[in-house]
Amino acid sequence: MKIHFHTFGCKLNQAETEELEEKFKVQNWQIVDKTKANIHFINACVVTQKAEKEVRQLIHLVKRKFPNCFLVVAGCFTPEMKVKEKQNVDLWLNNSGKERINELILEKLYKFNSSKDIQKRISQTRTRALIKIQSGCQHYCAYCIVPFLRKKVVSRLVKNIIQEIKKKEKQGYQEIVLVGTNIGLYSDPKKSLNLTDLLKEILTKTSISRIRLSSLWPTNINSELISLIKKSPRICPHFHLSVQSASDKILKRMNRQYTRADLEKIIKKIYQIPNVNLTTDIIVGFPGETDSDFTQTMEFVQKSKILKVHVFRFSPRPKTKAADFKEQISEQAKQIRSRELIKLGEKVSQQRRKDFLDKQFSVLIEALGRSPTGEAKQGTYWQGLTSNYLKIFVHPVRSSRQNCSSFDNSKFTSNGVQSDEDLSNQIIKVKLTELYQDGIRGEIKSFV
Ligand code: SF4
Image 1 (cartoon, rainbow, N blue to C red):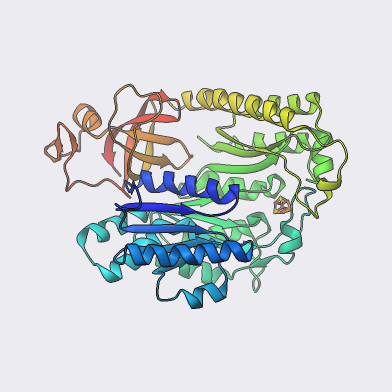
Image 2: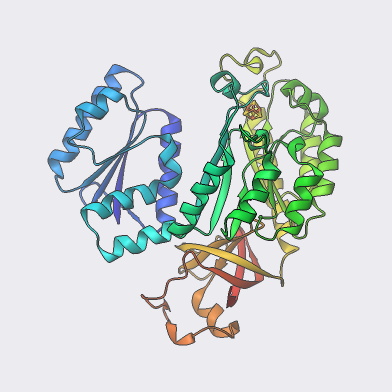
């Protein structure tokens, strides 16, 4: 597939396009010049009338110059635009479609051209499905606009969630991720079942191989949830905790309603789950954050053996409490703290990943992609995730020939995997053998 991106508007749109390009590259799509593309992707912006006019002009221009191309419009567009440009645009993508972008494009393309290649690519994108279980939040963290926009917490019925998961299973997905604005607030509207109850229902009523939880408010993690995960191998032993800071003073100013002691208590319990991993979000440069507050957060990251730290520099959102706080931190200080925390996060991640070397794990293979950072030899690698969120790179030739007893070596050539061999969306057992800068090498042991 050859795709070209046209981007309008703010930095967010530009960053999003870059993110999308990465995502497409991992799936082996080629990002090409507009003259060579068979798919054109416009990341639109209609913040002003002028911007809207420019987007519409480009839609016309693309279709006039490349009448046979498949044209996708995403980002911000208006309902009027959808009506006026109906004839020219093949796929409109709103924000809710962004997570399955490759799949949506392929599904639509398949209607025009049902070639085997497209069919194969559709199945390759079906690895992990996001299942929305609730929306809304009432926590009113001082920096967050969400509760003003989606005040009401609305949860979906368990039976509808189960139905959707069953559908995903039939489509070939191996993993689901339960997502929402704040999934810890989940409560079935009819039976008042909580998140742990929902997980129990999913375990009994579906046979999806893996169930993963997205970001959780730390104090929503209780002993019941932990003990369920401990005894249920289908639930991924991975928690993404939105910690934000480990200074009690800053947590209070953020209105996070927990303390560092609470965090440490929860994390101690979480580590009772074998091989569990933690990832987290941290905000640096929150108004009033001193060097000492920041040091407390750094110490926490180190001590808690966090596998991956997502660092965000605080930026004030109009209409939130924190935007009016005095003691705003300079951009320079935010940058320095962000760099320091990212560096520490990488070091802690390496240390944590070392704990898993020489052990065997099941990996859900996503796609054949780039070689890992830090690998001297270039080439393509199968990439996937363990259930505890370790990124694994598997070199097909070396893995199969050296170690795999139940593997048919005739399927491999010296240049890699034969064209008819496809490990994507398969769960395989690998032995973790070597650390890379951004993952771990896995040697294939067997198919699960
Ligand atoms: S940061 Fe999360 S928990 Fe806090 S108000 Fe926003 S959505 Fe709710």
